[in-house]
Image (cartoon, rainbow, N blue to C red; front, side, top):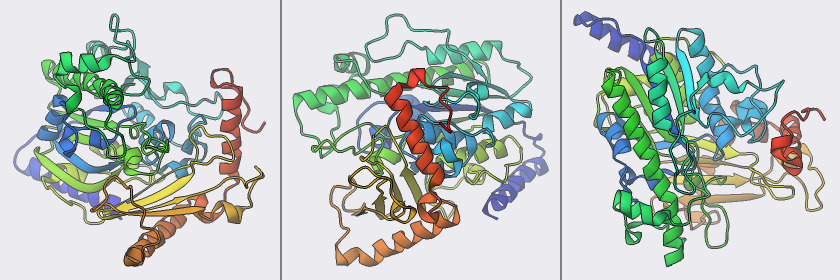
Length: 483
């Protein structure tokens, strides 16, 4: 019913435009700009970083800055799969694992748009990493690939792909009679970073080492400042590509009716002092809370900040509804169109007041496990972690697979970096139970195997991806899933 409510609101908005004499809206172009490994805090728009990213800020100023944008999983392949399928990571079977595959039975937003007259293309990183030539969706599911334009002698750690140049090339060669969907998969700021790019950060963007923001769990040393500066330099480089893409749209008179979405696939790859992952591949905000801003000048009032919790699963329904197309029943995400065109700020949809994220696997070998789930609202975060084998490395029974081996609880108002676990604090026991119950009820209702105990496919997929890693990914794309 929520999706139908959003559609009704959008229809009313369009009807009002027609009543005032405006022409029927044409389907928008869509530019989806996604960076690789970047937490929301890296952007100065969120109040912590001092990094200059004027193109991102422009999209936020002329559109909407979302303060609660979350990937479904802090791992690139399942998060990108959620964008394509409009589903949570656990709802995609093998698609919920990095280095596995998205089953062909799931329709993708790019293919639906292509089937309905959109020209679909991409540059850089699409879905992945993962591979399966017979069971998974094709790498061509994102349309024509534009990667021929390159940057001569790029700095170390920066890819040679001229993403903005390739977008411009697409615009020059596209069918002007069709709307387009273009996926700009920027591979920055994914590490490794160039060892001396901190010098370029100051030279090109005016950011000195003392202006580089360090998380509170990171010791303030010259080495750490240089490493952080080397990393965030690539965020500035990515933002420069975004600026050029916006200019390309403006030069051709296309920006007005283009829905521009800017985000990152998962959080920054960063460790705390004990070498525990606090960002990418972790259930903390640094792993799951990503930058997110959108603009659509023809339809969206700008200058707004929205606090609704938004999931990557919401993108596909949003793109389809904006294009005037039906959303397949299997897409469980919720369109944002009604919110985008509403002109409202703050909490626009009252029931977007929490978010669930999680992970099944990110490169570890048994008995190590990064399997987890988390639920977060405006004030608190509840996290659970799972084992996949026993201490002797033997498989667990289904009942043990769904039983958390560790719980964590954080007061985000007092502890935004999630450094002080309150799991045993009686003062917050009622709030912890409330979120734990909500996580259990919602995940069970939506068929999460960690809550239904139907873990057979996840166990099989975990074995499959570990085998791929042991043998060598590049040589094992054709490993039979049943082997």
